[in-house]
Amino acid sequence: MKNPWLQIPFPDYENHMREVGQAQVLRRLLGDCLTRYKPGSLALIGCATGNGLEEVDPAITGIVHAVDINPAFLEQLNQRFGQSLPGLNIHCLDMETDLLPFSDAELIFCGLVLEYVKPEVLIPKLLQALSPDGTLVIVIQQTRKSSFVTPTRYNSLALLSGFAGEVSVDEMAALLGANGLCLCEMDEVRLNDSKTFLTFHCSKEKAHQ
Image 1 (cartoon, helix red, strand yellow):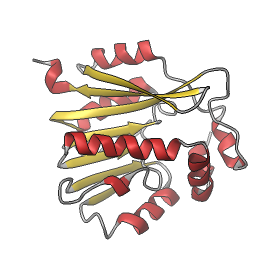
Image 2 (tube, helix red, strand yellow; image 1 turned 180 degrees about the horizontal axis):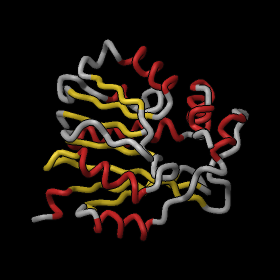
Image 3 (cartoon, helix red, strand yellow; image 1 turned 90 degrees about the vertical axis):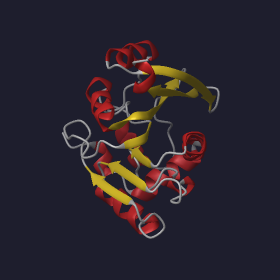
Image 4 (tube, helix red, strand yellow; image 1 turned 90 degrees about the horizontal axis):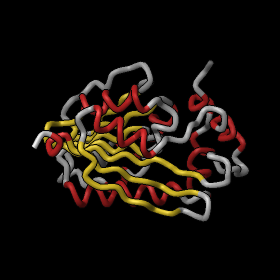
């Protein structure tokens, strides 16, 4: 079956994410992480057309790895950030089957990806891509009494409804521990009455102290 992310036009994705308020929150969360950790290198997993790359200061974060499955999304990203981020590396790959082609990321930000890629498959790959003293930040969505993908006028996003799967917090914590990661912090952002973002800050350095 063709991955539904390959069938979504980038304007539909961007407009949907803004309309439901998720684009703004993801950008803020990434910006907060960049300010807090000041990484020399960043990997943005599921970057789509940018998803907050406006927050990157290339004087601090000289290397950026942008990873997504959709080549049309990445083409837009390159047009927007190729000049302003001279250390930008774009990777078009399927995170379910492909390995990440880098191992030096001081910050990996993985927002709303594990709902579409099996956590037990992706987390070990993220661990391999993380620098020894790096930080892995994962954002997942928790839903109460509503559909996982909020209906909007952008009908192509409905393709994701049967593809997305909500991630269990307990299973996530167990999986992080099983992969030698320490859950240093977990934050909650309430989007509305039915949806919440949970942000996990993880470190493999602290896991071995």
